[in-house]
Image (cartoon, rainbow, N blue to C red):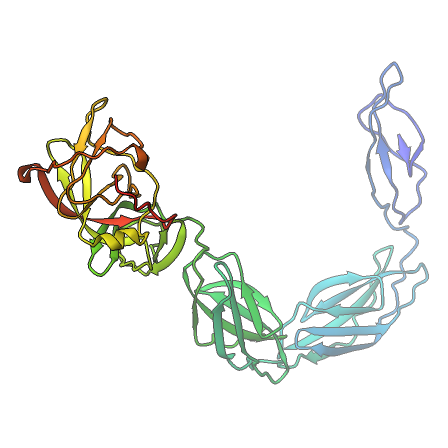
Length: 428
């Protein structure tokens, strides 16, 4: 058994009586269980107070000079002269409107559990350790002021602007109040999202390309709140587009009059939308087409409108140019050899001259090239096999041959080639 932390006795019983204590004194009493090996449990204690000594029957003097002052709409400060007692004053009991509200050991107290514009009556009573009580003081009456009941003016000219895909910035004119504006409450829709003492606010973490509505109200230190401002709307900016359109498809080219070429293509797709198409000639960008699916190209050289004939019997594509021999000699065509499509694999195909010059055409892809050749109307050449590349010196003339009318069909195509070395003008 322990008293004020000191072991005073042991017992095997489940109860114990402490003796020799003083009257009117608080003690800390605790107990711990001990086994035969001497192991002790943690202490469990209480702090009781002994009864007042039967010899103290004198009450403290009555508190005098009690004063009360309102220090705001919701607070009253009380003070008084300390009481005296033969054994010492233990504390003071404070009553408000006849009801005890607290006890204190000091000679002052501030009551903050009241409301503005209300009349209150306070009394104070002293007591000692023997519970002897003094007489009740004379009441002191205090009326709290009405306080600030006027709300601030409504914030005016609320402006909202999106400053990115996830942020809206707000600004407004200051409100006014008789006791001063303490701050502003900002609402997104009907949801309060923040308070600020300034006249601007940034709402962050928003969704892109989304419309939002805002209002603002002002409040003062007394908690008076103005009506909401007129709403302001803002739409966040779209999220950055980082996805490129799908490649264009079905690119074709058509020969037009006046040495022009008309490429066309199918519409591409994009997550946001295709704004324009860039047109390239020989790797160089030559135009931007906003929303269209075709373009007319007029290069200075190397692009011509032509008429194509296809040999249905041999399956070999040829192209006839209706211009004069002198134009062919002027170097309008590339000397790059072309692959020939349509001839049976491993077999030879014969292309004969006709009225005008004859050129071989590569139709293996959307890129179209030409063999450097300008044949007379009465000569031709032999294609050794499918997909052969035939330099000009290997062409062999076939004197007096002609293409039969029922072996050809006419179609129009684009002829786009690169400018290059001047073609040979040697006749085979």
